[in-house]
Structure formats: C-alpha cells, structure tokens
Image 1 (cartoon, one colour):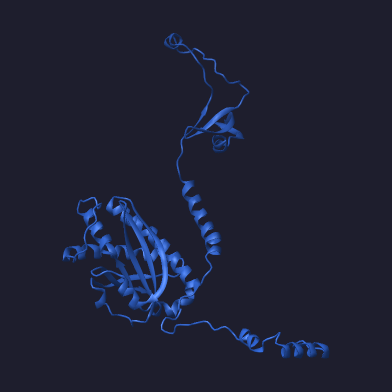
Image 2 (image 1 turned 90 degrees about the horizontal axis):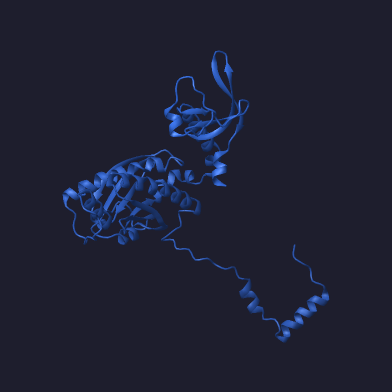
Length: 329
C-alpha cells in the first residue's frame, strides 16, 4: 500500500505544481519503464552456463588435439580456445575462407549435425610437415588436390575422435564423420538464421598461427541442453580425486625399489687397502649402539637400528628423514 499524504503535504504539492517547481510531464517520462531491445532474427539461445560448459569441453579438446598433432607431426603444436560467440549460420559461412576444409559430423546421442572447419593455412602447414617440410613458410591459398583432401580428412577424423574424451565430463558421445566440403557456400544444411555457437581455436606451429573452428548449432543440442548446466567442482573435487588417488596408490604398491642399510664409512690409504687380508678389521665411523642410515634408491629416508627377526637380519625404523623438506629448505 502506498504512502498516504497529509493535507499539508497535499497543499504543498499542489502549490509546487501551480508555481512550476515540479514538471508533471518530466516525472511521467522518468517513471516510464525502460524497454530492452530484442532482435527476433538473432535470439539468444545459448545461456552463459551453456557457453561456459562448451568452453570447458573445447578447452579439453584443444589439449587432446595438441597432444595428437605434436606426436604425429613430431613438432610442438599449441592449440587454445580464443573465443566463443553466438552468431547465425549464415554469418558463420561468410566468416570462413573459400576454399577451406569444412567437415560435417554427427555426435551421438545429439540428433543434429555439427561442423568442423580447418583453415587453409592450417591444412597446408600440416601437410607440408607430413611430407618432410618444416612448415615454416606461409603458403598462398589455393584449391586443394584430392590427395591433400584425403590426408587432411584422415587427420581431422582422428581429431574428432578426441571429442569423446573432451565431452566425457558432460555426456558420453560418439563422433561419426558425415561429409567434407571445400566451398562453404555449398554447405546449406541449416537455415540462414539458425543460431549457432562458434568456438574458435588458435593453432601455433613453428611460430605460424592458423585457426580452426567448431560450429555448434543450437537445434542439434536442443534436446540435451539441460546437460550443459552442471556442477563440475563437486565432481572433480571429490569423486574424481578419490578415484584417482586410489588408482595411484594401487599402481605405486606394486613398484619394486632398491633399498640398503649403510653400516658406516671409513677412510683408509691406498697402501692399507692393498695390504688388506682375510680376517682384518676396519674401524667404521658408527657406534655399536648407534643408528644406521637406511637408503631407498640411494636417497636417505630413515634412521634404523639393526637386529634379528627370527632367523633373518632386519632393522627397526627409529626416525623418518623428510628429505624433500630438507632439500627445499
């Protein structure tokens, strides 16, 4: 309920209006609700949560692709996501060069089609390295030969296989190659105004930069869009860490290590060494009742006392040496 004015307040208000101190039209304009512009031709289908999830997925993909290309090209390859934005399918087609390598693929269980574009600079540099070159010289854009298209098709299919691991924290997927086209204009598989999320990744090979693009149509992921809004921290921070720790412990328990106990040390001359015979005694620098050094892989880890366990010689741990801390200090 609004505030009730007293008679004196009402008289003061009427007096201010009659004298012109308050402009009623100005107040009316200020009280009008502000209208936010909305373009119905370009609706915002992808929320911030969706974009955040897709960025995480393709950050994973960029690392997987970097490792694959580095191993196969035998040179350092660095890939990173530099942008993620919603545009229309028509804008995507006009933003990529002609010719280019534009692959369409399915990502089960998603229903629709996806697109993977690799720029001519990336394609020619990769092929040059595979054919024995250094991939340092920039190659002018030209039409692709059939051999070049077949080679890059095999490489891109291998790269797409990395999507299985990249998506595993969100949903289990299975990529399947559909087609390859070099002229983007001929690839009219979606309506021009269909919203898509464009993930652009920068590739650096031998100080030369090129780009690859992932095009995610909203219509292709619409039925599973709720999967893109999940909490990662709780899963990664608890279940994943515990499972990883158990695997690491299990693997470490079966590792063989070399250990030995040092009874002591002594310094003798070369002449004394040459005169050693059976039955001679060498005086060590340790006491009979003192502790000995216990080494693991030639690194000191424990102070121990010698003894007998049944019929076997053994040692009893008396002190743990925190070698890592001592080294850091």
